Each structure stands twice: as structure tokens, then as C-alpha cells.
Length: 352
Image (cartoon, rainbow, N blue to C red; front, side):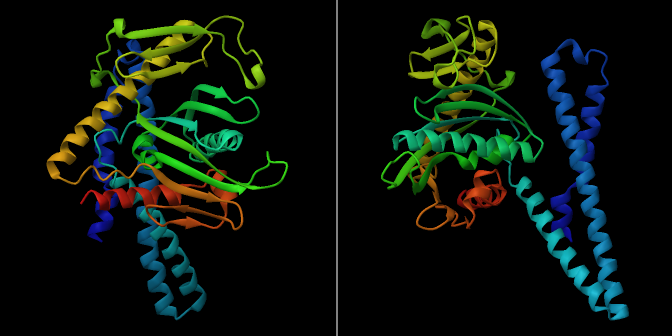
């Protein structure tokens, strides 16, 4: 029971809600619309967490009564109902426990996701687009907001790259285990001879930067190019040169944004992406120094991390956790919670 109470931690949730309610009631709240939006969004999310946690607490209490009733009346139907509810409650507790494992410095942040086609030609571009859809569908299933910053379409099919944000607390901590190279094996729909093709796409997950991060960027070290945004097949989606590409000369990092109608808005969004990439670069450098001190050589877990096999058999398997699913289509439709939970538990175990 003690471990259950630790997972639920209602007192902490209610205390956090009380603090946010006080901030949300301040007369000056909307003097800073961006900060106000974050406060109200986080308050709404935590209130939903409290309701969900209270409901789970009630289910656990009712479950004990249900088992007592089944025993007292020696009723097989009631006992079967209680056992089915026990399985359901245990699954809900496992999901909630995973959230308690997200204790990294940036885990509470929203997530900035970048997907790029790698080896495999048009199949890789098509796979990159399928991964984008997978994550957007996952976010939609959970009621999380998303915003696509930029998509670079490939000539024949699919995309070369895309950058989008998932707007939910703990989105970074949850999705960060998706970082690495994803591999697709299938009969290529783009091959006239119907041959099997292996293609790759890379996923990068970054925490959205906040004002407290202090990522200093010297404007003289930036090259800013503007161009006309375009859609699939070269179709124009904007009649002005409003899309913005920023190159950070010291590191060679290139970011772009074309989703806004205004060049100023696109530049601001692109700068946010650049700051996130520089923040992650700094975090990786700090982690590398710590790993060198520990003498573990870095122990990177990011590279090739999941295989999606559509032929000659059907399976999606995580190469780190060994978690697998025999229905690739459900995974590509956004049902990835099992992979996320297994990845978070695996990462926590690896840190010990």
C-alpha cells in the first residue's frame, strides 16, 4: 500500500494545483500572455491528473470491497469481475508509476521533435512521413496539442525532414526515449520489381527552451536566409518570402520554419528551435564530461533503436528493451505507449 500511495502522491498534486490556482488568479496574469498560457495549461493538466488519481484511488478502495463481497458470498461471477478489475487497476498504476520515473532536469518540458529521412531513398522519405503521422496520432489520442514548425517534402513521396512541437507537460521526458534511428523493412511500394527494402529515419527529441535556460546566441554568428514556403510537389503555400532558414556558423546547425504567415514569426520560431538544439548540445557535452569522469565511455543508447518489419513477417521490436508488438499498423497509427513505458523503465534502470 505504501508504494501505491507513493505513486499516487495526491498531496503533492493538490499542493501544486493550489500554487498554480493562486498564480492564475493574479490580476496581472495576462500582462505576459505567453507565461499566462503556460500557467493555465499546466493548471488544467494537473487538475486532470488530480481527478484521474482520485478516481484510481476510489477504484482501489472499491476493489477491496468487491473481493470481500466475492469471498463472503462465494460468488464466482463477482470474483471474476474483481479479478478483471484488478488487472485493469494494475495497468493504470503501472502507467502512473512510469510518470514518477520522469525526474530528469528537462523531463517536465514540452517536446520539440525532429524527424529526418536517412538511408533508403524514397522509402526512407515515406517512412519519415509515417513516423511523423505516428507521433501526431499518439499526441491526438492523448489530447495533446501539436504545432508543425517546418516540413521539407521529398520530390517523389514522403518528407526529407520535419520539426514539430508536442505541447504537454512531460512530453519531453516521455518522448525522449524515442530518440535514435528507426528501421523499416518491407516490400517497397516504389519498386516495380516488388523487392524488399530496408530504410532508415532518424528521430531527435529536444526539450522546449524556456526563458530561464540562458542560451546565449551572438547574432553575428548567424546567417539568416529567407525563401518562399512550398508544399508537396512544389505547390506554393505562400506568395511572399516569409520562410526563414537560420545557420549557426560556429556549430553548423541549420534550422528553418515556414508555418507562420509572417517572416518575423517564422524567425522567432526558428530561433526557438535553434536554442533548443544548442541547449541539447550543451547538455550532451556536460553528460560526456560526467561519463568520462565515471569511466563508462558514454554508454550511448540513442542510435539504432527500433525495427518495424512488415515483410516477411509482421513485428515492431525495440532493440534496447526487447519490447515487441505483432501489429505494426497499430503502432504506426500511434499506439506506442507500451514502447514509451518500456523505454522509460529501461533508461531508469540503465542509470543505476
